[in-house]
Image (cartoon, rainbow, N blue to C red; front, top):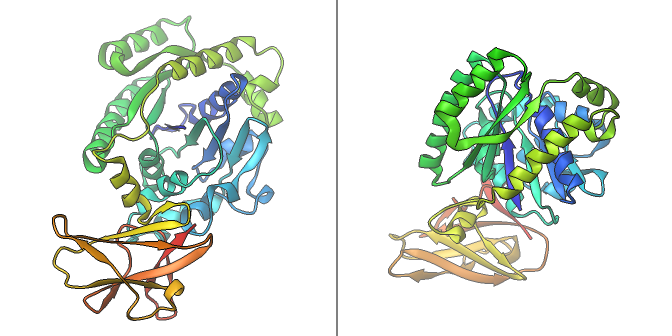
Length: 358
């Protein structure tokens, strides 16, 4: 599964148009696609005639509620395309998650548990580089940056690439960058000059495909379909099919880390293999570590964990059936939540219990 974010902090560059129609083009090639609307304006949802009233859960619930899975939020457009709609309340997520641990990895954590058989996940991000965009970036192995032919877009592209470089250094994650010339009128000298500047400074990440300017996009949005659902849009359909094929040829790894198992642990802690769950905790200075939770009736003795003397890591394997489980570690008589699990819920004492969903 390849996860691709459509990003640009500049509004009006056609991110949503690209997200919708690239998703549709990939479906035309027979790929199964999940489109995630991460913009509170909900334009990707509206562009496919879907609103938050049509579903029980939206991207807001997906990021906010640890019990909500990706599958719980999907709305089926056709046999090849599903969408997770957005809603205006999504704009409140950044404030509500302020101070929360691993808030930038919430989407990545949910996608890592995805049970659906998708070839691509396409994420339409908001026109800024805030928490929502960072969630999209951390979850992605690739980004497409639509750039309209303007001086402001050129300047914004350089700054955005600096942000992606920062992400790579901080998260140990390599994100493949694809720059797409979008909404271009190829007959004008000015547009050709802008493309020349892009080739001069960003040629190594510039896509060969370009997308033309057209009023047909407005017609497709009005009808709540992609450009593949309207007539006399052959040129635009061909351009997006060309884009989809070019993306297919640019195969990249989703996440590059020193240890992919370590990356998964950092996303949501315990590792699930059938009914066997491996819990780990880094506590090199601890003398005794136990695992307790509702599966031990919150016993103070809990389940004794074993220490790897070389790494200072404590582990235990437990057999649990499917369900939701709250748990904590007891480190030398001190109760703590799992620092590597982003999913947690408040208990009756106002403290956080780690949440494991199998």
